[in-house]
Amino acid sequence: MAEIVALSKFKVPLGSQEIELQQIDHAEGGMSLLRIRIREGKRFTIFDIDPATAKLWAQDMQDWAAGQETGSHD
Image (cartoon, rainbow, N blue to C red; front, side, top):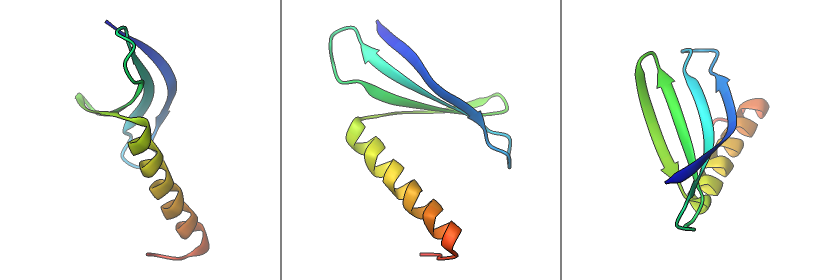
């Protein structure tokens, strides 16, 4: 059985999707995963990603957001 720890939950202003971040720790002592749950009405999309993938995804999102602030569109 996995232990689930809530990390963050927020609503996207445009589109009203609910995004929830959770840490998944498996009882067998395996790697912790980041669960990303996106709720759109009654539909859920769930991603379980490893730390390396989370780091890449986060960096790409930060780079994109920074470019939006400066007016750059790569």
